[in-house]
Length: 275
Image 1 (cartoon, helix red, strand yellow):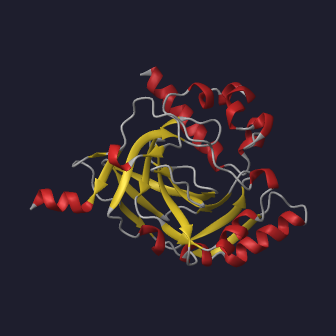
Image 2 (cartoon, one colour; image 1 turned 90 degrees about the vertical axis):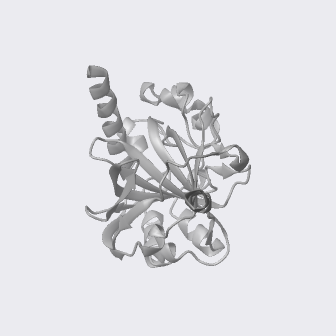
Image 3 (spheres, one colour; image 1 turned 120 degrees about the horizontal axis):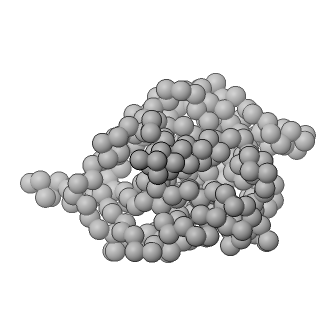
């Protein structure tokens, strides 16, 4: 019982760190994506980062579609988001949107998870059959017990992404604030329309991993959508503009599966088995 309480407390603390303006400042130690503070050394930067080196269920991973196991027990991702006020922030290591209460939920494995924030990584952290895409969006959800589940969307270059298009001016303002020396600027976004984020998906991949930044805590339920969406090159430039040069490529290297199974939901297969 005490072990479970301690584990939940650690998860909740990790979530609080994840949502803080600057995780590096929260720990009094900075990490980077290259050099002596790069991913291969994260675990040695702080005792609280040890999971980054010693964890056995780390993220991201390469998803090999032919090795993913179809799981008939998985259901379509039931997500109910609504338009909401939000705050655009520069975390230092990525750009994110923090939502006010009530933006919506995802129903995963019989449990409700509330959407707390979205943030972007470039290039993508997860790969599919070895292909790394220009951008990956993480939708971070947290349940009442502190459990974390992330929905990940991969993007290739093409038409502008409707979700990003609505905050173009806010991103430009954030970049100007950083150039003016206000690295910790918060840019209010009056209304973020989430309709494009909750499109039904015919296929997704599910596995248990970790958050992809220090402290790399585990027991995170990942859901990687099978459909790759589109983003314009101009939008990627706008996403990177507020970040320091060393964080503009902010994807953690792939981690070993260590015997974990990647499960797959496939609507077409599910319908065939039903009929």
